Length: 224
Image (cartoon, rainbow, N blue to C red; front, side, top):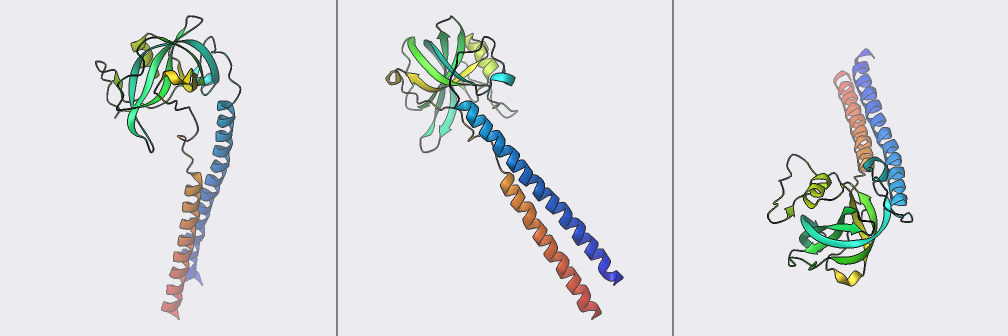
């Protein structure tokens, strides 16, 4: 009987660890789904005025309405599913109150150089956002061409002489003034892989249990 003890201990301890990891991922899944629902609710809430002092810790995804004049632009290399390569167009929005902020007007295909020939009065509804898109592999912007490879809000604000605040448009009126198509913020880019992780851990537990059973069977055959 003693000869069965080592494989039984290995099997039970291994299964216990793998089950605990799977349960933890199930708990993480519930937390992530609750978080995503909270973010979606915040994104779709009734828009309000631009805060006096926007704070990424407090105002990320805050829905905002603003009126003002759009001018200038930077292009951020982007790709949209079923549309292909193009650019996110980042412009200056000078509000009616005289503040200058960044405005993400949305996606424009590579075939169009610019759709802003002169400053244009608009009304914008969207969400404040400070995207985290910069890492050690992000190339520096080509300032001569006005081409960027990620939305670096502080650096763009410095280049365009605005507040370090980005308003991502959900809608712009009048809509027929621009070719760029708004790409509103959402939760699509927030990873939620906890279900797959849970399935993986539980599947490994079944494999571990099966291998333990095979080990015990081989011991039985050797001593039978």
